[in-house]
Length: 484
Image 1 (cartoon, rainbow, N blue to C red):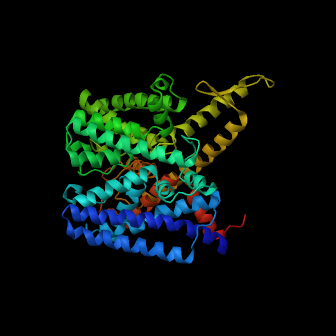
Image 2: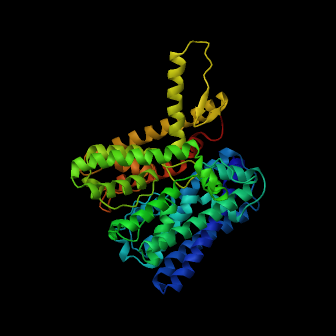
Image 3: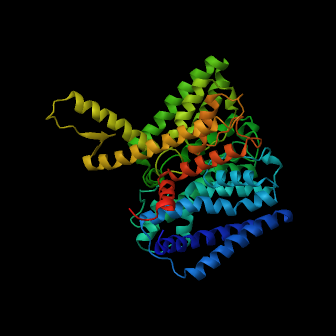
């Protein structure tokens, strides 16, 4: 890499470490207020490291240079390694985890995956429980978005940083007002989630943590058995509502709040999102009913876990290890698709799946109709121009191909590093759950798992959170530099 490009990237990482140091300072105060003095050193060390990196980078690069989209993507790719790396200290010093497990927990939180190496989070300190929830809450809306919010500056760079986390739509005319509105909606939805969960019977502390991880579609819980701990259908319904909201685009939520009448005319992606939930729940319920035999219990677990999987939240009411191979395959496919574009969900996104399906229909029409026939392309009731379809389809096809290649390679590799007692269906689901940032955990994923398996799943989480392209660019530039 040339010195100029490195300078641009590192100068824009300064804000990342500054924001991380602010977060760690807040956690120090919270730990002290909670009366958990033993937790203060872990957060303090993370504060010192992130603060020192901020100062060093600020001295070397006194002003942030204007960046291009390629630089913004590289900053995003590095951010989801750098922030988790700093965040390992609380897990090392408070939870006394091994380095590999601390890294796993940290990257799982910041990528909003939710797989955990803490066997019994109910025995963890309140500050660690809250810290895990905060990482997923911030990770859900995006680390880069937080940095841009606090250190926002007008200009092209801000929008490029906004785009680097796979965001496109603007709610308001300017990027500043768009980001402010996203945060307002995010706080409101989180507060609403707390109220709804408490109304359903969940204690306040649990409601705060679970609302943060549900709206952020993360999946960390304060209990080892997740939502199953409560054995309460009202709590499950309340949690599902928050998860579904987390999987919806912020643009749609904003329009719905501004004009409730717009709910009568859902856009194509949101319609498809709800259709997938309805059809998927029916399929999984039928499959599990024949496998398990009791309808209400089967339906209750199927609707919750399917919703959790599609929204890529990862909260659980039962162990998927008991499910049939067909059910696991359905859930694996759903984990790959994920929620809507412009939401906190992971996965490829419903919109990309729709574009690929549209291209199949378009190909069939062009094949069956006469050569001179004019074929119009519609998604929902909206006619799409050919150039837009070509651009969106090429992006969807490229990302989907890279996504599936990464999954297939990971399945082949991971199958060699797990106990032979785990079948291929469990390996497939574990990889899809990690790369889709779903976090639903089967028996295969536990602290006794080999280090190479954990590293592989961490890589899947990283790839999935960034939708692969920024990671590919980072690897390419590490080996070949910025030469085309």
